[in-house]
Length: 250
Image (cartoon, rainbow, N blue to C red; front, side, top):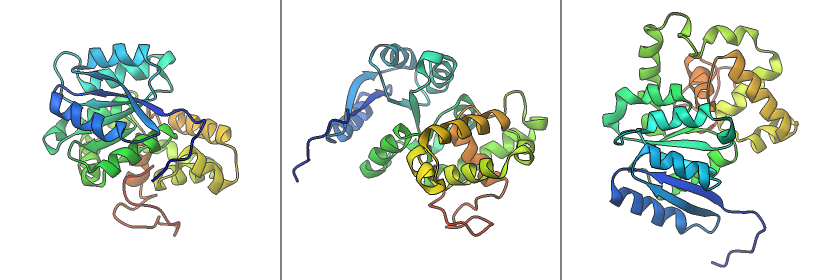
């Protein structure tokens, strides 16, 4: 199939995993897409950080467990650096990483994917987070929610810097609409179209939601929407009857 020329630059991706074969496989999948290009590979979190700082990276794929600086700490450092605010973080996980998932979520990861995810899901995830959305692989949604509940039970009031369901009561009606749209699978463009507002306004609302709910990333907003019952995992509806996508896209 011939791809029409476009002036839109490709999504620039850095891949970080300590297993060379994993990096090779991910690179082959992504570089086969005309609108995605891998701009670097890293065997640990520090190398990933160095690449992100020097290659104008849009999206970084981070393995959770790597020698030295792991994926969680790398995510934390990216989120703490104002100059890297636009970089989106996709965490690559396995079911054996269950104990680390909450830490990655708290650090501000934008998406969670299993390492053996299919190519189409990987490609869609890269595009979704680049467009301002978040994604939790349906296969790990239950794990994320279970770990989040366990952490919340040990942290009265949500813990320092942790998401707080109490903030939901302070949301304006419009902020709740944006939260629902984000949790149902909307990127900034999709939320803007659904609610009849601009993408700039959506970004402003998301920033306010992150502040009010004590979140460091949009994936945390998704978890709060599930945990509070605003969105029902495993269904195509919200309690108020608003349709939504599967239990992971945001």
